[in-house]
Image (cartoon, rainbow, N blue to C red; front, side, top):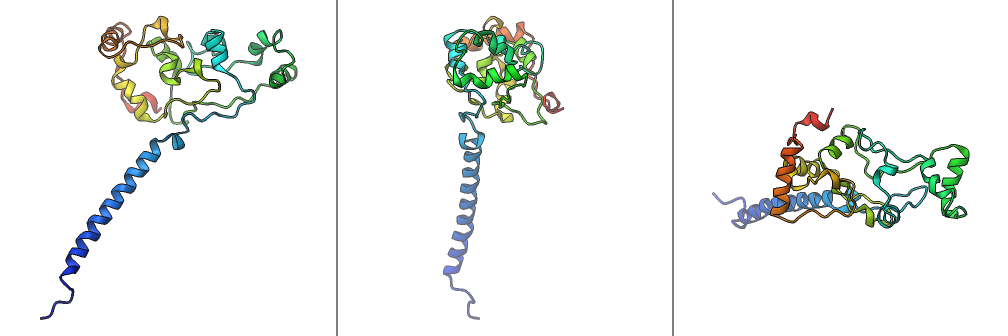
Length: 218
């Protein structure tokens, strides 16, 4: 009986199958890389704000403590955004005619809050408590990056669950002395020194490696 298909059809079929699998694998890898890229995560993207507030100037050059503006960070899940009165403590005396600061003056005159845009905005299904992280020795710059060098604030991390779990699984790599939590210029020791310090602080601060779903998803 004559063959219906030429012998070369077998080779063509194999090439088609394995080629298709390679293409699918390549597409999956490309999508994975895209999902981790700043283009998708919006890392390093500066958000439009009513006033171009510079952390580099205020926190870095002037040395203003984070808690001066983010007043509830030590006792609440929300770090807090400064009311206009906080801004006007200084700007009723300096830069009083700056056109850039007119929205601040208008907010103060009209008693209408400035509509700041959240830079590190988590989804509604994620619970994050600033106060517990602060009390356990996790510094501001651990999550927010080097804010003291940011002329305009941007998101440093991906905010993906895997990004959070990196710390939850191995807190000894990230914890610092409580006295350094609000220091924007703190530089952790390298390598084994940080691990030795971290293990000591994990024990001292009673830090748990919490990885249960209901820790963050409530």
